[in-house]
Length: 349
Ligand code: ZN
View (tube, rainbow, N blue to C red):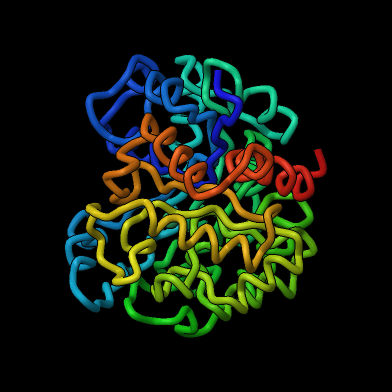
């Protein structure tokens, strides 16, 4: 058991289950590929994290990572997904998480205290997160249902447009000020999440959307999987103004391992040194302070640096942090302490 178990802001393992690529039993026993399974989580000190339920676009409109290898790019965003289709998919995502729990791979956690207890356990701590909220109806009936089943975190948009607002496109180089933010319905959703103490995720919102959330919520502002725009000027990353808003709200940022959001040249290519991760860490620490930086891997959703590879490679990242001067107290904060603090403030328990 490591002294520094990682609680992580974002992964897309559920998408693999919903696509039928893997089974809950397979996740528990070990998988030949991908970034997360139970044996590798144990080996790498991956104690758990936010497990995202993401509704994919039709296969022919799926996000093309290869276009992100160019020197500059703007990936066309897919069309909105119909509510009924998204609702069915999201419900199956909650089922998939319950299957993972039944298979002994995860423990679904609803409070920071439950996460803290699960981090050293055999099973991964899993917080149910919805990335893009197309499956939620205007009356919030499904929001309340899923909250009752454990939903504790939600992003009102994945970059694709929804009833709730406009997301940020995948554009490099670009700042995140790319268009209008939340709709009136979206503002009502944020207010309802605030009332239910569901965390609202800023990742995938554009600049106007971030300002909208900040005006409505009184919870800490959190970007679960985003990086520093000052280091990598990608539309998905956070400008210094946004980082200052997050600091002032006493929220936090999870460092995203997606190569295109780390590399200063914005390319989705995995061959580069972890020194680039350290540049984001330094900028985020300078801007946010030591209490407001954590990890948000994007495992199973992105091309991560070869130097990390998968969740079993986390010790190599922690070694790089240590070589960079991160001591025990800060290591505790980055790996899980800051997430526990911010989630406890958000959820009240
Ligand atoms: Zn994402």
